[in-house]
Length: 310
Ligand SMILES: [Zn+2]
Image 1 (tube, rainbow, N blue to C red):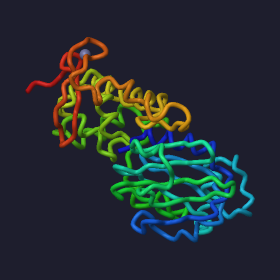
Image 2 (image 1 turned 45 degrees about the vertical axis):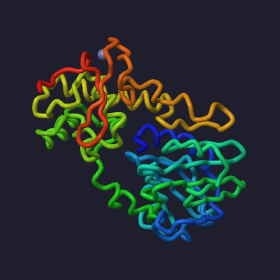
Image 3 (image 1 turned 120 degrees about the vertical axis):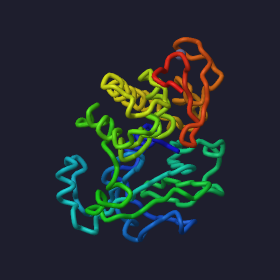
C-alpha cells in the first residue's frame, strides 16, 4: 500500500501538472470506485492539491470563481467553507490503486505493476479524468479496494476517512512526547505494530515502520511498555528520517516519466531492511532476517536492532 512518501510524491508531481486546469469529463468504468456525484466536479477547475496521511485531496472550484491560487490555505478554508460549489476529490489508493497522468509524458504513482507503463486506459482503469488541455488522469485499481470520493470542501476535515487520523509526522507540532503519549495507548503491542496505527501517527505503514525501527536501532518486537525515553526519541527521529528519505527518493513507486528509466531505481533500493531478507545489513553486514509480526512481513538486522528478549 502506498504510504506517506508515495502519496506525497504523487502530490508533488500532480501539483506541477493539473493545478489551474479544468476537469472537462469524468468517465466512471467501475461504480464502486467513485463515491458521490461526479456532476459536482465536471466543468470545475483544480485549485489545489494536498495530502493528509495516505489520502490525496484535489480541491476544485467553479471555473469562473476567480479565486487566486496563491491565497493561503487558511484563507481558502474560510472562503470555501459551507459552499457546496467547492468540492474536494479525495483519493485513497489502498492496496492496488495507481494514479497515472498523461500529457504526452507520463507520471505514475501508487502500487507498482509492469503494466503501469503500458497503454492507457487498461483493463484495471476504473476512472478517467479528462482535462481542458487534453491530458488525462487514470485511476487504476486491480482489486477495487481504493476509491475516489467527491466531498463538500467544508466537510472534508470531518469526513469519516480523515477525522480520526493521528498527527502528521512531518508537520511542526509533532514531537517525540506526542509520539510517546500516542504509542502508550498500546502498551503491550510490539512497537512496530503500534507505529502503524494511523491514530498514533499518520501515513506510516509497513515499509516505513520497518525502516524507522532500524533507524532507531530498535527490535520491532519490543513492547511499547518496555521503551525508555531515549528509545522513544530515537524512534521519533527514525520515523521522520525514513519518511524524508522516502520522499527524497520518490517513494517506493517513484513518479517518473515513462521515457526515463521504467519503474526502477526507487526508494526500495535505498531501504535498509524492508524487502532485504538474507541480504547483508548495509551497516554491519549481518544477514537481514524476515519474521511475521502482526500478520505483516517484518525485517530486521539481528545485530543492529536491540531491546528484545524473547
Ligand atoms: Zn546491522
